[in-house]
Amino acid sequence: MKELDSHYIIDGRETDATPREMLSALCPSEAPANTQSEAPEDIIDESADPQPGNDYFEPALAKSYVQAVANAKRDSFPLCYSGSLSRLAVARCLLETIFRRGSFKLGDLRPDARWTWSREPIGSMAAFYESVSWACDYLDSLGVKLRSYNCTGGPQNKLELSCSAVESHPSDDALFEESPFNSPDAHIEEGLLPSPVAIPSKGDWIIYIPFDTCRYRLGGSLLSQATGKNGGKSPDITDADYFIDCYEVVRELVEDGIAVAGTPIADGGLYTALYKFIGGKAFTADIASVARAAEEEDITKLLFGEIPGVLIQIKDYDFDYLDAELLLQDVAYYPLGQLSGADGSLELDTKGGTLKGILISLMDNASEGED
Image (cartoon, one colour):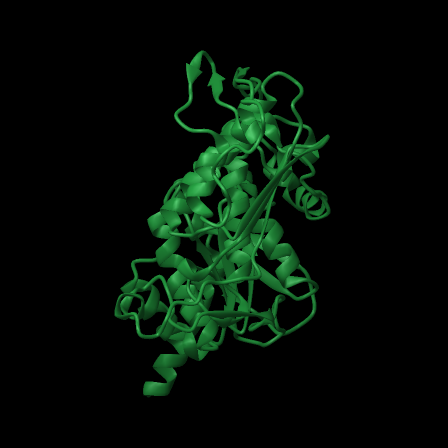
């Protein structure tokens, strides 16, 4: 794709680096120089802005929304959200590895990145540049390098990442042995350590851990796509340091067997991931504490805002251990409730009564035991 070597002038401003220069900084194995016989032409374009629209969705329709979103796929990035959706694509790829078999840390991962992009209409190439720039900036902040990248023309605009490789560091390198972000014997294997869906075990906790501290928004979301509405602003996924902390502690929970089941949260948001994770099991998710912490009154933003994170299932006797580990790393987590072990459906509690009832029951049981 010759546009990789072009200089871009967007909204009247010349950019600092070509897309290939940004990508090659994260992928040393790729040649940074232009090999074409002629210098590529400059690309002059304008940024695409979100159309004014209503970002309000009816909370009472949440169940019908999740059924629509659960079956939806994002085939193409809306141009005005190319940057934020590219960061979400990076986060989704890394979150999918967190449950894989093997021994590795975040800095060991080497994803492959593939862009498919169209030159038309106006705003498309500006969106391509933003996609590359935002993805590279986020990867660099996370300390993650690319194994390869590829850009081809096509009718749709999207970035896809996958990760099947890690970079193992020599065991005699004291620097890497002590690094919290790399492993001396890193390797990644096929298959998952925990179950990808919740196990019907009575009393087990379902825990929600968001991997970014940004606000819940619906711009560019699958909910907006499925309903044909404009979702307004998109989530501002930028807190790479927090993502690193979350990844480290959750990966330890996975490798130590504390997480008996787990799934990433990305496209479709919390409710969609929970809907698929719970399946046909009876579960009431208490999301009141999430809403209070996020200071979010619009429940649909909380449920469908595409902030990267994970859902994990743990045993009741491991709850105190998890609490201590996440508190030590200063990572926020939200217990959504306990499984009943029975078949049923997923229900939502927005008032906070479910967890309150569990706590009262635990206190009553403790009092009886003391007597």
